[in-house]
Length: 80
Image (cartoon, rainbow, N blue to C red; front, side):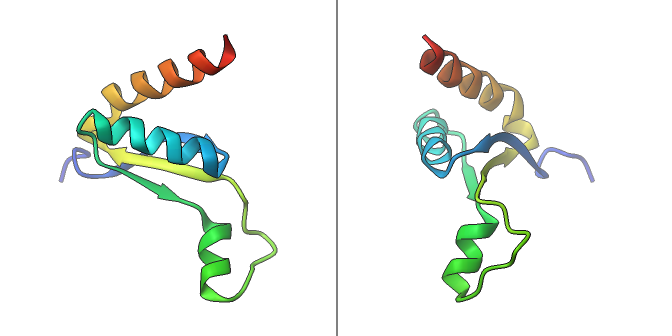
């Protein structure tokens, strides 16, 4: 059992940035998942006090390096 199919976090931040990053990754052929515990709890009809409003973008281990590079490129472009 390798880490090739395990999920790794490449970004943690706002839901808006997470959505942009997910789209960028998928345009490059990298499947990404956005996880937001706060949003998920709202959809379920309850909110946990400890639920963070931050979203996480996750990719498979085999895609981590190229995904991380794309995330860094996106974040650096916003800093300019």
